[in-house]
Structure formats: structure tokens, C-alpha cells
Length: 69
Image (cartoon, rainbow, N blue to C red):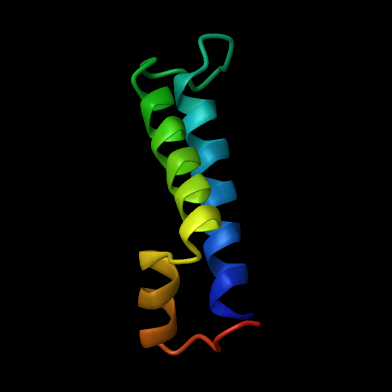
């Protein structure tokens, strides 16, 4: 898997986890403050799309993930 694919997989997992913990209808509801984490992940995805730079992608590359095109 390339670094950009890993970033998107992690972002998707983080969004689903935060919705699971932050949505009042969820059986694993903990606190609505988990939805702030969803906003944070979404803003980071938006920022990386606009600037074409992502810190997590750079970290993944340095940990050994192939660079994607």
C-alpha cells in the first residue's frame, strides 16, 4: 500500500470510530465531543486536498511506505 492510501484508510477509520463514539444513537456512545474529532479529520483532509501536503503521509513515507503518484 502506498502512503496516500494508508492516510485515506486511517482517515476513514478515524471518522467511523469517532462517529461510533460520538453519535447518540450508537450503542457505543461515549460523548458528543468525539464529533469534534470528526471535524478535525475532515478539515485535515480538506487542507491536504487544497495544499497537496499531508503530515501523516510524510510520516508514513518515512516509516517505509512507498510514495504514491
